[in-house]
Image (cartoon, rainbow, N blue to C red; front, side, top):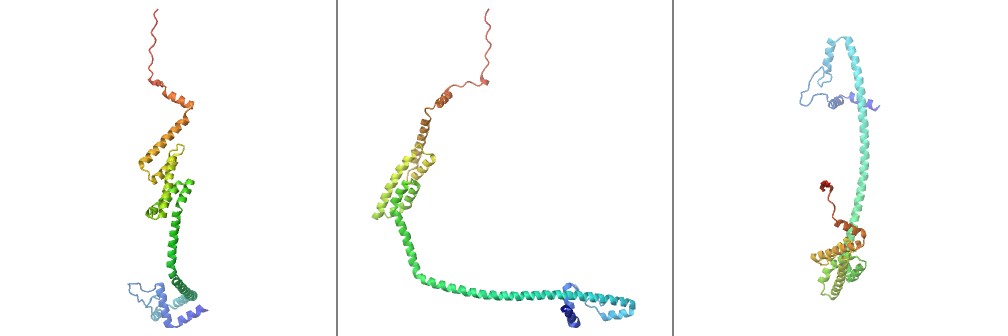
Length: 304
């Protein structure tokens, strides 16, 4: 198999065997540690200074034959076990190497396709940029005209709103949208005042002021209606404030409304007998509490 042939090639070459031994020693941490000297023990089989010839001569002199046979058999078992572990380790690492090589080859293929796609995308972006530049260059002369026409269109819409202002104010008053009427007037009054030297703008301004004066009369009348709720009257007074009424006038209008509202309530309550009974009962003197009533003295005995 592949792993057996690989192990045979490694173990047959002394230089490869020494290099492989050093690699395995560094991988498993066998040998000297950092900052400590290497122990050169010629009798330690796991040490770097192991001398097999010296150990073999000493064993021939000191160790009996049976002990040497037993030790030889044990060493053969250890060699087989180590060779098996070595073959397994080499096979596993070789499999990982093949997997890594296949992964790298696949990644190279993907990277190559990605480079092609990026080059295609870059060409498309460059083409789009060229088309965009050509469109911008062709529209440069028209962009100023488009901006000018847009500005003129906005100005015409504002002029149309100004010329339609009296009709819009009358329509808002007919719909009882008084807040909208005041808002329209405030949005346009400054412009009309600024250009009132132009006859057409002056006529629009005078007509709008006449409509607003009529609106003031309507709001004053509504703010004094005692049948309206307080919220509506407060809204009308706020509109009158926006139209130029002073704070003193607004306070007087609100007090007049409250007075009329209370008089209307009293008139609605008149003619009810239960109300008169309640008023009479409240006017009658109430008896003192029982705790304040003093006991009367007993009557004097009559003369015989």
